[in-house]
Each structure stands twice: as C-alpha cells, then as structure tokens.
Image (cartoon, rainbow, N blue to C red):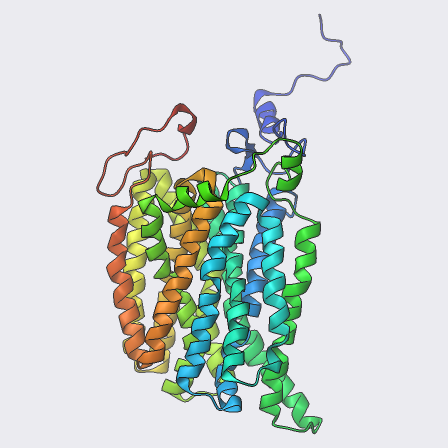
Length: 486
C-alpha cells in the first residue's frame, strides 16, 4: 500500500548495509554487535575498535592481552633479581641458568594442552586457569632457599607462558582472517610487554623501594636479601586477582560461551585426538614451530639473559641493568603489532606470498642484528643493537601468527598451541647455549641460527594458497572466495 505521510522515509541503502553488518547470526546470544561483523566467518569482527570495551569482540581483545600481560609480569618478576638471588643463596651461574631453563620448559607441554583445551572449553576459562596457576606460586617466591626450590618454583610459574596461546586463540576467534594478523600481533605485543615491564617495575622500582624501606626501618638481615623476597608478591597478586574479571565479564566467542552453546546443541563437542592429529600432520605446523622457536624463543632467552649480560659485561648495578634490559621488552608496544599489520598489508597486495616474503625478511634481519648485538663493545652500541633486533624479533612473532589462522581454521587453538610450544622449545635450547658458553658467543650463535631458519619460509605451502616457490596448492571452494587468497 501507499506509505503514510507520517511514516519515516526508508533508510538509504548504505545505512541499511551498515546496520546489517552489526547484526548477529540467528544462533548468537547477542542481537547486534558494537563492531561490524562478517556472518560468513561466525560473526567475527571485521574491524579493531581499540578504544572500545564492548562485548564480545573488544572486551575479549583487551582481556586477552591483559591476561597475557599479567601472566608475563608474574612469570618474569624474578628475572631482574637473579643476580641478587644468586648472591643471596650462593648459587653458581649453571644453577641460575638451570632455573631459567626450567622456567621456559614449564610451558612446552602446557602450551600444547592449553591450545587443545581452548578448542574444547574456550579461551575464557583457560586464561583464568593459567593466571591462577602462575600467580599463586609467584607470591611465594620469597620462600625459596635452595637451587632446587628455585628451579621448581620457576618451572611452575613458567606455565604462565601458556597465556600466549589463550591470547592468540581468543583474538583469532573474535576477528576475521583479513584483520587477524593485526589483532593477534597487537594483543600479543602488548601482552609480551609484561616481560619488559617486569624488568623496570620489579628491578628498578620495587627492589630499590623495598631495600630503602628495610634499611630505614632497621629490619634484621640484609636489606637486599629481604627485598627480593618481597618484590614478587605484588605481580603475583595482580595476576591472581585478574582471574576474577576474566571469568565474570567476557565471552569465549562472538556468539557466546562454549559451555552454554554446547548445552543448547549449537556447537559440536570436539574430539581431542582428531584435533591433535589434524594439527600435527600438516608440515606447515612444523616449519612454523621451528621458526617460532627462533623468534619467541630468542625473546625468552634474551629476557632471562639481558640484565645478567649488562651486569657482567658493563659492570652495572641491579637497578641500572634491569632498566636497560627493559628496553628490549618495551619494543612490544609497537613492534609486534607492526609485524602483524605489515603481514596483513602484504596479504592485501600479494596474498599469502606477500605474508611469507615478509616472514623471511623479518627472521633474516632478526638474526643479523642479534649477531651485531653480540659484537657490540660499547654500552651505547649494545643498547642500540638490542632495541633494533628486538623490533625484528617482535615483528617475526607478529608475522608468524598472521599466518597461523590460515593453516586449519577448525583446530586453530591446537595449531596455535603446538606452534606456541615451539617458542618455549627454542628458549630451552638457547638457554642451554647461555648456560654452557660465554654470553657473547651464545648471542652470536643464536643469531646465526635465526638467519638460517628464515629460509624455511620457502617451504611453507598452505592448502588453498600460493607459496613463495609454488603455485596455488588446491583451489579454494566458493565459501573461501574473498578471504585474502593469493
């Protein structure tokens, strides 16, 4: 019939299209979203609204990186204090590095498991579990009195490294493939920042503060010994308390929490065995696992070594060495996000081949600048090289997880967990270098390995996409059209 004169005029087509992009699918707990979404990709967001905390997409994004941040803050809280711990407990260099190896080894298995459990139970509960398991023993750091006790403590707190996998799974679940590289890299970069903040917050702020308090109060015992035993309480508490917020006010996926969706019959109950098999039988998983060992593994080893290196090579005190070591971690503010963003840009222009080319460049230059750092003879030269190679370390991490969502979307969590575990395996291997060699020699060998494995990018060949040396492996089906194919 004829429209009444009092009826509002129909909305213009572009307004209708914009409204439709905010509508949720029929099986979502939400009716509309604050972000624009793609219903073909399970209501994932096509945009990253950084200054929004709206559920589900942006709340999950911010909780993902904050969970990662607090876990890393607790995990590395003791790192800037290792020289004090060594002196206080009378430990050797080998015993200190044994504890560091335990610290990075703790998450090798749990990273694989957390990825699998994210596929089954969702990232929300897995993030909370990791935060709690890491936070409580961090509070108890001051009770350590032996080398064995230190190693056991750091083995358990090392489980905090699994927060990386839950973070990447969460953001991959919330954002489309086209922007997942940037979302993953930003969340991981800001989460990784916890390692750098721990250096300056614990080593250069809390440690001298508590040392001054114990000195002026006339407390019995050495103020330095008392201080390192108290410092880790604050990061541990922050990690534990944030667990409550993660559980109470976030979502597993754009459409709601996994447990509720399974109860309503809206989601299949996955098979753990099938997920693991699907992840491990893809050769790309193994190539990216090795490469990730040479970026995140390099980061973990350097975070453990940097303060000790500056103290030994340039005769700096604990506070000054921790402040300089923190510059490595602070590159996470932008570098990992930049790596993921440039991977997305490369994909927009050259498809998967562009992503892989950027991957090769990042790893090669990372290795080069690690070797430059190893040969630096002045403090200024060492700091400059450290900051430069940190940019490429974080960039390579962002680039790697710009590729991960393409491998097998059905088992993203398991794939991310396996590849993430590669970072800890690399850290264990590189930590053994530092335990057995002079620091300069260990850094140089680590850089040479990294540049060499950059050429593994030539062998990555993902189903439905081109490789650097290969044509499209299998043409994508109709439902894959327009998803950033090469």
